[in-house]
Image 1 (cartoon, rainbow, N blue to C red):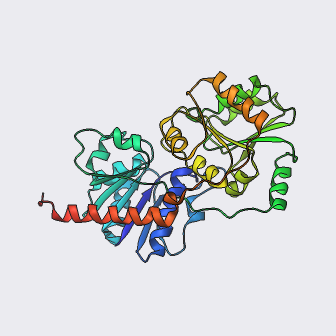
Image 2 (image 1 turned 180 degrees about the vertical axis):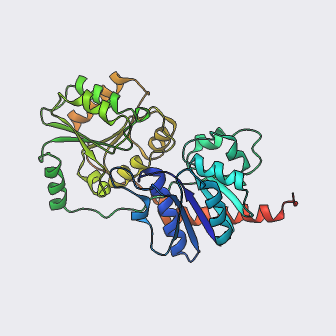
Length: 346
């Protein structure tokens, strides 16, 4: 099966990691795989999806704006895929216009937020709420995927101590972490407010990892609190989770937070808002939840974790392990291809 993935974003966050894992698993299974990215795929912090892609994956670069659709159409015609997998809205919109002679699917990394999704032969939903909210008139196939996860190796005590020291934390520090794009919808401002209001151990630290449009405002908000720091983009984030005492995902909107899944894989206790994706993971795998934008409720949870310091725990995430998730994904691809081939011409 020849598979083309298209993602026209910048940097390397949850959507890009998911796309890279799909490409890598599929090429490892013997499928010819093409990945199409934009010319400015590397973010200002230096992060790029291409740093995480198996060298066996064929990579093509298209212009950022001028002639993007024309170039993408030519790339797809040359590769002649059996299936095109679109990631995020812009690639979905362009492929819907091009209408290549292949089965077309898109992952709802966010939600069904444009008519181009209705032109897809199949939609891949990472969360149950996305299936629930599909338009009643959508006529393609849909599939509830388990967001893929590569289980991470366990660090030894010396490695964890070294990471905590690097983050300014000693063995007794209450070390809280958050990770993701630093944007308003991720709710980091509420976490900072809750931290300020909470009665926490004297030796408490909060480190936020990532970058984004709200970073300057968040730094201003936190500038007079020495407990709060910004860790930027870290390639070793999966190591860092294991060094934390608590991971918080305070999002106002969250389809399905890959960072929370990775934190659960590390065994760290988690707090999440009741945004749909956070709720789903906490209901399935455990954790503490608060109502979105309820800063006092988040404050109370921070205080409880600060008092009780619950230990890390093992969570069975095998349904998300990349080999299992990819087997189900490839089965869905085949269903979409078969249905398209059986459809009447025109």
